Length: 217
Image (cartoon, rainbow, N blue to C red; front, top):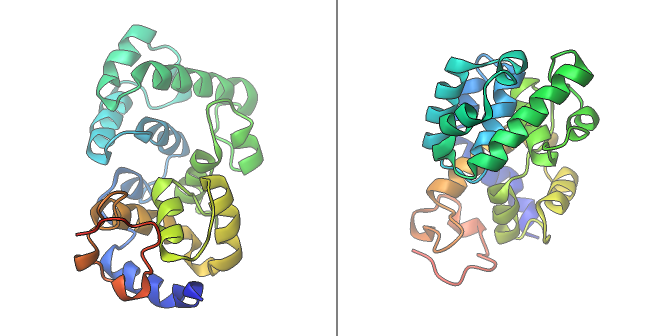
């Protein structure tokens, strides 16, 4: 069974793609601010990490609390985050989330999954990223990389990220949960890409059955 190789694969990837790698959310773990982690995560949706970092820095220079965020005129907020893509939806989500945090949680980002996903605009992945990166809780944030790669490795067989999270909880030793997202995001961006992955340079190639891979490099 491919999942018997999980410890070997994780050990290799931990060394090749350390969780402290240069990404916006990983750097935020050093001095976690739950609100900044949450907003950066909302900005990162369908955006490149380097853009997310620049846009987050620009936005937080203007407003880094929910109180300050709701005071920004919509037009100005959209201009600040324009280059992140889907700026209309993201601006609306940022405003709505900020208002709910103020009205329902006394201005503090909730530290439980149930409370986080009760806020419109926050899904399971975003909730888990906040819990893991801001509060240090043992959860598995599953994005497109964390869904695609375990399926490609044959660890799981799922159709959605939500189901992948459930299955990963069953097979992935808990000691890997906190670092899993950071490692697999870096691995997925640099090597195990969606189309034409770089299998010739992959450090875990011998453990990978390459399920669903039609073309590689």
